Length: 607
Image 1 (tube, one colour):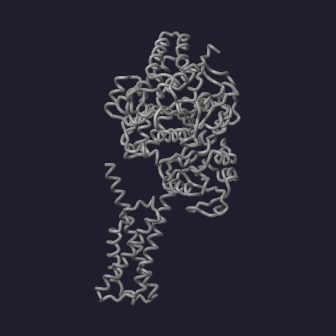
Image 2 (cartoon, helix red, strand yellow):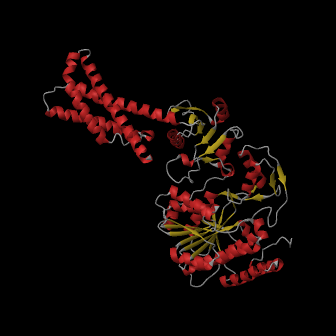
């Protein structure tokens, strides 16, 4: 019944527009005769047949031309050209008819004026129709758009079409744009006057529509906006957009990455596309922060099949729903599995035959893994061992392991587990054609389980932000940036390569907390120091002293030639002893076994 109602409304709109077009065409013909003959109605009556024939021809042409297949709510200049084509062919039609039907002698000016008049009047009716739709569907939200460039214009049109809110004005620093209008919306002034217009027009939301803006530029804009008074949303950086045009769904809340993020990196999309396109690709930990972003960026390259593998059903469900909504033709399969489960993982490899594996699944929470060291070794070490073995057995082309800066001189069991996994991936193995690489980097902004999530909850609850130590520093990188570089590193992969991402300078965690508080409109919130937790360091390291980083492929990717000290068999044997000892609860003994594999391991009790 609902479908019938929708279809009925659709036909009503078509008939309504058709009647309007015929009416204005009739009016244009009468007006043309009046212009030609003035008030000589007796002379005008001679051309009644002309009017009738013109209307019949116009009616047929308008329908055939497709005038009523256009959704005028989203009409573009191209659609208005379609109207011109319809009125022009109506004019050609009447000229052709009169050429063969000699009984009607029509002044040339009357035909031409009828054509031009009908075109102008139909366009005017459509503009009024658009205006009526836009204004009847606008929401109550009052908006300012910062940036009157291409992206700002596109998002303004999307907002107008969707009824998301009412755009009060644009702001832009370009003096050539200030004072001019876009869609009848004025470019009021420079960004420095943002709060003046926010207060003047009672603005609910400011949208920063500058996808090319760097973190420095975003920070510069935010200096002029009081986040405690008005909400700010942004378009993501141009590297993060999944399409050429900007859509309403691309607008997102301002994030910590926008404030403390670094300069955007450039990657070679052609090289990345060459090794990912039409491949069967498996991403482990596909529901996690890094894994899900890997899936998003891989999906752009049109793989043959993308395998979303993870242990958490909700996170796998969510990334699957997101991908199918954004990529219509993407071939996906969802797999719920523990990477350490040998039998089931072998069945998965046998069934889907992955050609490239990105291994992002891991336990990452340092203090939690200090309480559960057995689980850290079981998943992070033996899960990786299982995947490496299966990759060799099923002739996977490339295997890229996602590691962490906590694997360098580890002081925690989480860091230890990632270092052992690094060593295993990079060690020698006979009769294996798979190319292996490790990509190591530091903290990513916005990852699940990161300290930023904790800070955010504390700020939302108006509780003091708890920081372990005022001197604590960390590397920070945006998730999209890190993943882009991971994919780039995969393009350079020959075999047994260790790649380390250039993380820039370490940032004091206290600065990050203050930036987040400002972002959430609570810059005066209290900060409390609680002391370093088990397994944590004051600062992180990206390299061991003996590692010699080089930039052979990309300015933001260090590559290191690695000479393995142990075979995979030796690492696996010692790791089994380590796991058995931890299972028995003998932590001190486990530490000594761990040092046989990773001599740099510094456990808390030794300190």
